[in-house]
Image (cartoon, rainbow, N blue to C red; front, top):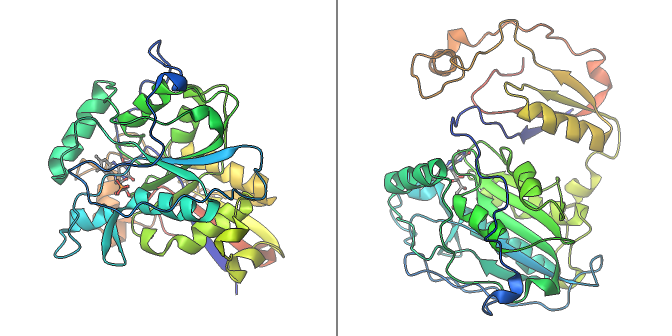
Amino acid sequence: MKKVTAVLMSILLSFGLAACGSTQDDSKQEATDRTVESVETESSSQPEMEIPEENTEGNPDYEEGKTLVVYFSMPETSDPNNMTQEEDNSAVVIDGEVLGNTQYVAYVIQENTGADIFRIEPETPYPTEHDTLVDLAAQEQEDNARPAIKDSIEDLGQYDTVFVGYPNWWGDMPMILYSFFDAYDFSGKTIIPFNTHGGSGFSGTISTIAELEPDADVREDGFTVSRNNVQDAEPDILAWLADLGYINSSSGASVPEEKEAENTDGKSLVVYYSASGNTEEVAAYIAGAMNADLFELEPVEIYSSADLDWTDRDSRVSREHDNVEERAVPLVADTVENWESYDTVFIGYAGGIIGLN
Ligand SMILES: Cc1cc2nc3c(=O)[nH]c(=O)nc-3n(C[C@H](O)[C@H](O)[C@H](O)COP(=O)(O)O)c2cc1C
C-alpha cells in the first residue's frame, strides 16, 4: 500500500492582491529602544487566555541563546458555543477555550520548546465581524499600511531563534507583520516561520520575510497548516519540531512513531500542479530535501489568468469547480513511469484543481 502525503502548497491563484511593501523602511528601530514586555498580552476584543508557563530550560540543539515565539492571530469570537461557520474557521476550541488557529500552533511550539512568547496585537483592535475584517485587511494591503503594534518585545537581543507565526491574509502576511519586521532588526538571528491558512499555505511569505530581514537566517522549512486541520495538528507540529532538532526533552513530548518511520524506505515521488510557479518551487524544494523524483501535472491547455479567476463565477476554474463533467482536464502526460517503485507520493496543489487519477 502506498503512502500518499497530500502537501498543500502555497499559490496566489485564488487571491488576486499582490504582496507589497517588501523593503525595510527607515523607521526600523533598534529593539533596545523599546519598552519591556516579553510575555503576551491580550486585547480587549480578544479572548482571555491562560498564558503558557515560561519554560527556561531551553532545548538541546540551541543552547547558546534563548528562543522566542512571536505570533499574530485573529479569532473572530471568544464564545465556544453556537459559532458561525466563519467564526469556526478562525478558531479552535481546546479544553473549552477558544484560541485563534495560529495562536494554538504558537502555544504548542511554546510548550514544547520552552520558549518565551509574544503576541503581536494592534494598537487599534481589529473588528471581529468577518466581512468588516476581510475588507479592512484588503484595504490595509492596498494601502501598504503599517498598523501600530500595541506592545513590544523586551530585548530581542537575548534571542537567537524566533518562531514567527501568522495567518495567511489575502495571499500574504497581515500588514501588521510588516510593521513587526520594520520595527525589529533580526540580523544574525534564525527566523522560523509558521502559518495557518484557508488553502493558500504560506503563499510567498517566507521569501518576503527573507527580503525584509536580509541578514537573518530565514528557515524555508516552516510549518503550515490548513485551518481545517489545526485542531488535530499537534502530532505534526511535534514531528516538525523534531525534524528541526528542536523538541525539548523536558517537555515530555514524544514524536509519533509513524512520523519517525516515514520516508525511511523506498523511493519518493512529488507530483504537483503549479499554475503560477509557486507550487513548483515548493515541489522542487521537497524533492531536493527528500531525494524524490518530480512529476508535473501539465494541462494540455494552459490556464490563463482569466481561467484562474475564482471570483468570476463563469471562469474556467469556477466551471470546473461547479461541474464534475468539466474536470477531466487532458494532461500532456498522465502516466508516471515506474509507478510501482514509489513508496511515498507527495501531492502538491493549490486547491480546487484537478484530481489525480
Ligand atoms: C482577512 C482575512 C484574509 C484571509 N485571506 C486568506 C488567503 O488569502 N488565503 C488563505 O488561505 N486563507 C485566508 N484567510 C483564512 C485564514 O488564513 C485562516 O482562517 C487562518 O487560519 C486564521 O488564523 P487565525 O485564527 O490565527 O487568525 C483569510 C482570513 C482573513 C480573516
